[in-house]
Amino acid sequence: MELVGVTRRFGERVVIDELSLRVERGQIVALLGLNGAGKTTTISMILGLLRPDHGDIHVMGVEPRTAMRQGQVGAMLQSARVPPRATVRDVLRLATALYADAMPVPELARLANLEDLIGRRVDRLSGGELQRLRFAVSAAGRPELVILDEPTTAMDVPSRHAFWQQIQAHAAAGMTVLFCTHLLDEVNAADLVYILVDGRIASSGSPAELLETGLPVTVSIDQALDDPSRLPGVLQHRVEGHRTTMTTHDSDRLVMALADAGLVDGLRVVGGDLESAFLQITEQSGEVSA
Ligand SMILES: Nc1ncnc2c1ncn2[C@@H]1O[C@H](COP(=O)(O)OP(=O)(O)OP(=O)(O)O)[C@@H](O)[C@H]1O
Image (tube, rainbow, N blue to C red):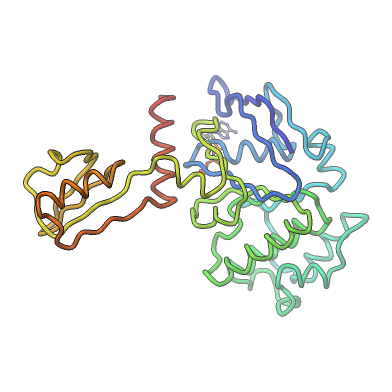
């Protein structure tokens, strides 16, 4: 699946700006971005629900609408409603009836871990169970590409782990997955991550590569310093009670300076995490494009 130079406006406002991205067969790709970055708009265009003003979108080599019509794409959207009085079995039957080569209902129930809930009314499912049902519906037609918009919302931690394990197993069998999430630890399930800022790709790479995007390191000691900003390479600092916490891009130099001054009580050095990487990338790109 590929987007090349895609632009979309709402009125005068450019919401997606010359966006290009590529998802290879069998890849799991995460689309990240703050609220309003353009994730849903991008997904809507890939699904053929919205048309771009400029640029090209190819889904499995064809136009989005054609890919949808041919059942090559399955989508699990936040907005998807299910009939409340129907049972899980009813919904799965309805979903499979739409496709010539649908997955049999029992297989679909197994896939989404719904076997024990097959006779349960949909309005009596928990939030996480309902999400699993939505996933089953998206997979009913054996799509080559599945698009998941915040799929694990309302799932507890064990359900989320089980969900991503299943997704990884399907990707290993050739299914391509594009998902949006606000839960940054889920990005670790992805092969490739795109970070969207104001409708443009601000950064892309594997989760490990994102972590290496020059993240500041946090250095802290058990001593209230008068003026930490005088130490070499300190970007930001905070003094709380007897503890001073500083961030730096050059932890070696800062730690050496602290050691030279005999300030090593309770010394801790903590590397950056995915959340800091994400915030740094979105803040920097937001400043550039503002
Ligand atoms: N139909 C529309 N008409 C006008 N503006 C719209 C429309 N749909 C979206 N927008 C605007 O486009 C921008 C991108 O919206 P979009 O829903 O794609 O963001 P998002 O990244 O999915 O955000 P969130 O994380 O909150 O779901 C937002 O500023 C939004 O207000």
